[in-house]
Length: 230
Image 1 (spheres, rainbow, N blue to C red):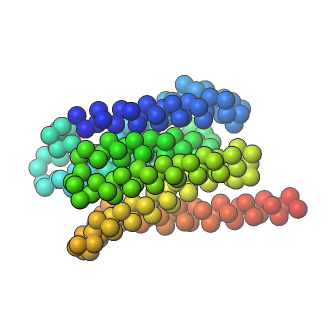
Image 2: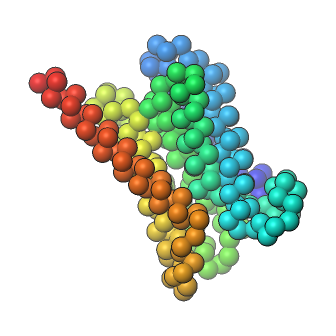
Image 3: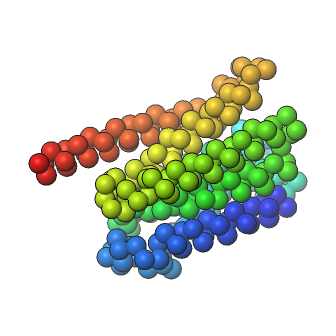
């Protein structure tokens, strides 16, 4: 039942991806059709969903019973957003490398499309959280909506006119997502700060460090390119 409430967010994700991909000259030049882009998106979604469900059970519910039964059970429904991001990121990277797809461009477009859906995901999830967490859920929805406006108004045009390197949007999305998720977790852990130290936050910290590393790598390559042009 819980997953049905996320269908509007899925439709927004697919529509946003359609608008981003349909006339993109890089995809056209690489021979990537709209149908192929959607195939990649669905594979990414399924892998992200699988990892999301698995990590939710491992981090929150699993007590040593039959893992596969619990995985398919609708009674203990629940998903890990961190797991979805992690699974989706790995899927995009592996598919891009194996099929020789433009990793940066693909990561940028899928990150933007997912960013479109995130406010709706949080609003849908508000039904299932505790009352004391509602304010943070709504705050997250607002923060991601503002972030979407910032990305589309200021960063996306720079990628399209090649002022900003491909892949930068995806890296910034991972960086900001990890910061926001860690900050939310910290606020929820104020009554018992020891609960902040958990496996999910460890994954978020790794994502944060990785995105910082990739960001500096992109900036270094950009500076080299400018120096060559001069």
